[in-house]
Image (cartoon, rainbow, N blue to C red; front, top):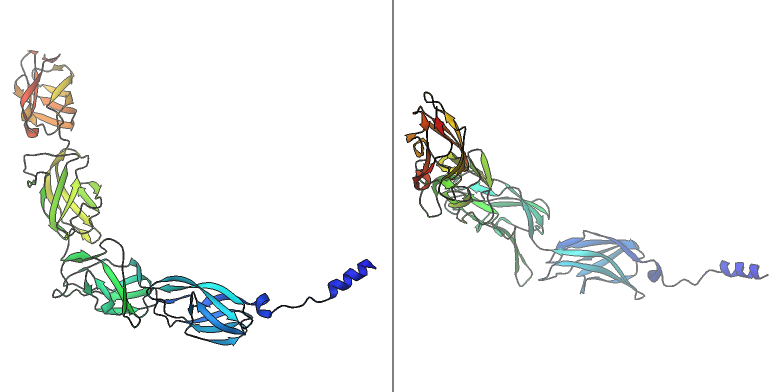
Amino acid sequence: MALVLLVDLLAIPLAAGPAGAQDARIVNLAPNRGTVEGGTVVSIGGRSLATAVGVRFGDLDAVSFVVIDDRQVIAEAPPQLPAAGGVPVTVELADGTVVTGPWFNYVVPLITGLGVRHAVVGGDAPSVSVRGQGFTGVTAEDVMFAGVPAVSAHVFSDTVMYVVPDVDPATATPGAGDVTVRATYGPDQHVWSDTATDRDDWYYLGGEPTVTAIRNAAGDEVDDDADALAGVGETLTLEGTDLYDVRIVSFGPYRVAVVGGSVAPDGTSVRVTVPSVPVGPMTVVVETPFGASSRVSGPRFGFLPDAEPSVRAVVPGVLDVDTGGLLLVEGRGFTGATATDVLVAGVAAERVTVVSDHRMIVQAGAGVAGPATLEVANARAGFAAPVRWSGLLRYE
């Protein structure tokens, strides 16, 4: 009997509450973003929305709305000035139920990427793809390249536009700057602008990058005829034109990455540290995203001796009196040494090959039988007084 009663109770329909309270929901917004100026027409999709009596975007009432049917309400987004960002969309039903849906995003112009970052003044103007958001309604005069208004702007969508910069020499000059997009909203003419990043993103070039001079830390110009040796770790300044956004400086086959802050904002110079390279003259090339400079004859590069020359070993210890021979000399301070800096038994070596600052190979000439000395100076590095080594070295 109790079981039958329980079954009967379960069979009795429960009293239904207000339809809106139980079933109403917002599923989607189309579109889910719009300008802070308002006016975006938004389709609110869901169910049990037929009794809607109000629509709000955040704390603001919709400009207007119309109930299409149980599953759709159309509303016009209100202005949201001067702030931007996301706000929840809510629908109030006749029974007082408030249904909260997805968020609607108020957007302003925002640049996230550029397809091209330079143009040559007086050259062909590129079509620059600009990616971001909030581009609806943007015109050419709203886009600036290094402070110069664009010639034209085609807004493909709210997130993509194609802009042609002004390259007329009468209005554009070589230099670096920001790419900026702006928009004016509302009766108060609120202006919102955004730049691509917090650094220079646009370069008006005068042509290909060039290097016209190389200077050492003292400011003296150096070249392949200079007496001073540019040593490893020494900072050089390369001067020229259109040296914008330099990424790499090549010393012959050796490439050096340029760190931020080393490039002059006006594109006239770049500082770089000499890498570990063999001793000898090399050409220098500056590489930028816009091209590479022509090769410039540079100074002699290599290790600068950290002390005057010294010798600790010479092998082998015997030279032929008629033909001389090769000697491997170990010590320090050999960088830049030449044949005139090395004397074997008082006679200049025939040839000297500096392997490193600590090792060199000396071709000695014929000599007189008996003990011999080896003297090493380094006039190139500023050590003219020779150091004498009189170990086990002799002519036989």
